[in-house]
Length: 435
Image 1 (cartoon, rainbow, N blue to C red):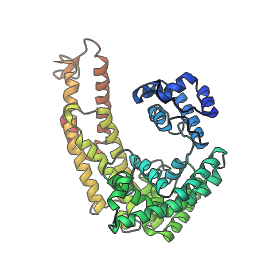
Image 2: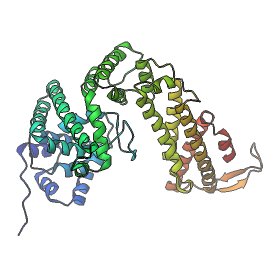
Image 3: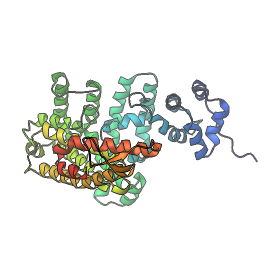
């Protein structure tokens, strides 16, 4: 017995395979191999070929083709796609991708703890599957219509249909949340069906976002890829959309501003956008406004960067990762205080100062370890002449091993970045002591 034969792919799928230089024999392998073998085969593709294959498969799926294990292949392709820049790896806006574009700028792979305005990427698929199962009669025709319009390039028509999809999805989500809140029968089963408590909390919040989905999607079409709130042509559409959002739901209006996170050059610019919309002169005015969530979102992001530095163990810390987190923390802290006057006696100001102290304490231990690692990398002896006479200096008898050299380079960059921000973040004494 030869086992069950794999489903025959459509002509379009076979054509797609040929375009990316994968023959019919390899195509059969893609269908029948085990997951590890499949991933190995796909992992050998160049990122550019992986993108072509992913695009071809998505078009095949939009057209209704079912001859290939789409999810298994895409799982194998994603690591290759991630090697491409975000602009290059943009793919066909499938109905699912189209739907979750309303959360652009708020989807994250980190932040295991649920916080307002942040949605776990892992929650999206369970929510999508639940929606289609729950409202299949109303959503399936709309999904098919969106797919068809995308295939023929009618993106304006796809957006119009998406608005209807958003309304139905929002109604379904809010009705389900109401059942859970009132502890109706089946509430626990509903949470399990969605994928657990975190996915449910994300879905609950998505229900609020969808109340202003039309305004968010309108800005996505109207605004350029990068915005500057000092430019009237950029800010006026934001102001108009914000006022319309407030009319619909005051509690949902902050999501309109957070949706701009992927359109500003620096995240702290959202502080300025929010302050201008509510005419806040400093952070306490913003905290008392309907856009307080925007400030909380940014401050929590700052605290999270500080938290990561705190968890790094000096004995085996990654200097490249430490440099990245330190730089992001420093730039976010500086940007936020410049964008809106940050009062030290205010709630956000106090949290900012606490985060700075946490960073300084964490860095003191990392500096000490980095200094020791640099000294231990080479044999040291006291200089007998020159400006450093009497000081310990390294003896360069031969080039260090590649792995050691890479770590030394990482440590050097980390310390150079730390020195740059020592005064701003208040750890100059700890830095000089370690060096």
